[in-house]
Length: 476
Image (cartoon, rainbow, N blue to C red; front, side, top):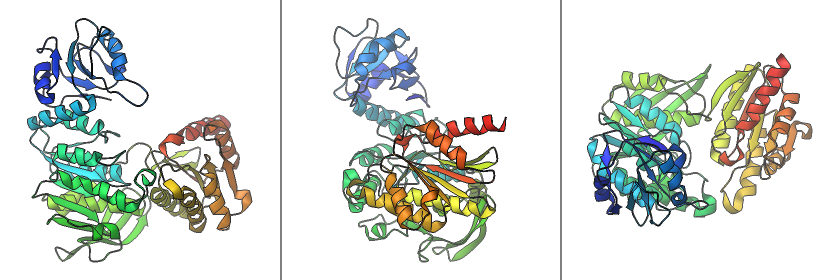
């Protein structure tokens, strides 16, 4: 990870003041960028040597120095430290990154929106950013910079003229969202939903709920919390801030209620009732398919309304939404429509993706799904995979390919729900991308629609790369 400081350079003395670390060398050394990967180090870059599970960033300081880096943050110093390097020695390099972000954020006077949830964080971030950019100079989390390392870097790279910063907050352990929220001090917090991601670690959806609500730790007293009003766990959570709003597709009493949802080509249209304002807005349009996109658009509508945007501004912003890479990207390869949704997968997002596939299938082509392993689901892993397969069958998926050892249970679920054995192809080894692509190429015909979705570790997009090569060679 590497970012450029958004509001001017820092020197090592200032950085020492932020972190309380022990400075060895020239405190006047300045930097305008920060990286955590020695391959991205160079002149004017501060290299933060973080100790990971498999590697220790300290071991790569000589490599950073050879590239021209003159300043580092590390947890120790010894004879291997290159000469001419200014080192800031701290007990915990990752904590130091948080401290730098805390000290540096004062240079940017902006409103901050924090977003968390089991699924839909990135899509919601993109919708909210698109809407708020209609009125404000807006900065948002780039890519997957949503961790305890990435989120502080996002704060540090925020340009000085930013008026609203939209921050995505993910987690890999309890307490992380609390740390990020206390750092960001958001004026608005959004929790998209409570799903099954991280069940293996947290044990129950109730514990996932508690982890997501850690975002309240830093929410300003006057801040607004926006929740999914179709999630009973959220409705029952207490205490909540006075300024709490709900969006929903099922709960007609929510502050922002979407109804009459319909597909219009590659767009989705819906009507919106604002119960808190006693009015209905008709024919809102978004350039994406699926109810999960409607939820994200509702969060953006609510955020825009709270920040004073008018209906026309919000609707313009919604139409400017563009999905992030590997998240429901829809395109054609040799007459076959591909839905590339390979960034990650959970039971909830699998169902949403299958819904999109089956809605596109109304065009007349066969609905083909390549579904891979879903990870970190705990003791009910098999059940969640089986239910995904059953859902695919019930929704009308015509042909099912599975990829990975766990995904064989998706195939079993589809079979139990009535899918013909001849239409189910199981590949237990997730690393055989060319073989899986060859199987797909042997089945697919022009006009078919192919969904590819799996957890990030499966790297299912590689199947698409291999499939593209096969189809293009075949067409030539």
